[in-house]
Amino acid sequence: MKSQTIIITTFFVWCLLFASFAYAGAWVENFNDGDYNGWKPVIGSDPHRAEVKVVNGELVFKYFNVGYCGDWLVLEASRNWSDYTLELRFKFTDEAGPGGTKGVLITYNDTFDGVPEGGPNCPFLFLEPYGNISGMLAKSGVWYTPASRQFAFSPGVWYQVKVLVQRSHYELFIDGQQVLTYDDATFTKGGIGIGARDVVTHFDDIRIYGDSVPDGGVTAVEATGKLAVTWAALK
Image (tube, rainbow, N blue to C red; front, side, top):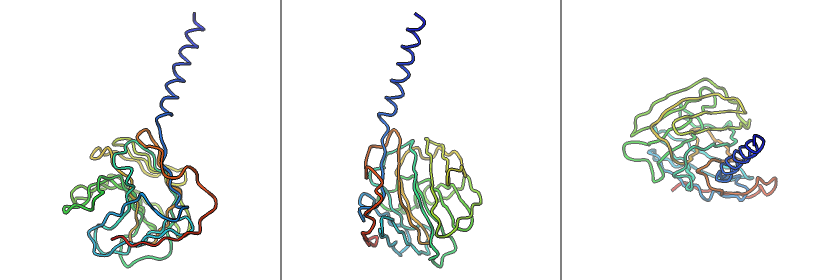
């Protein structure tokens, strides 16, 4: 009887594990097809527009602005996702704009139809090339910084970023090292957004996975086919 109980219990645990994996999906983007279809431009408050291109399977984002809220791209399919993990690679270039604040923007937001008049509503991570990493929050134009730390990036170097979002809990990893963690319950679901301010930035190999994430994007990261070039200006 005892051995049967152990077998039944083990089988039940495996069924639970299988069920949890069965409902977890993954959305993958590597830009090998030469475009960024599925990503929607969000227009910021500044009159200047971002320039976006896909070159050799990498998304290149250029936005030199003077306003406080710039353009970015949001993944249309991710509007209502929650409790997910985002992984991507990025690198800064030496080409920078005249503004004083430069960096990469990774958002978890409900702003898909343009920035509201009062300002954006989203938590976001801001990675500055020569200074800080900040976990920030914008609500109706008011900005907060729940967590920050110093971290120096080098231009031309690819960095692997991992962002863990679990309801009100956020963790940021760079090249496998946890560099930031904080809690804020203002937003508990929302979409993925990426962008950059006053520094040309390359993005690649984006992967989002979790229970609320459906399978989508491309099914595998291909090693070839990175020759297509697509230019676009956000309008």
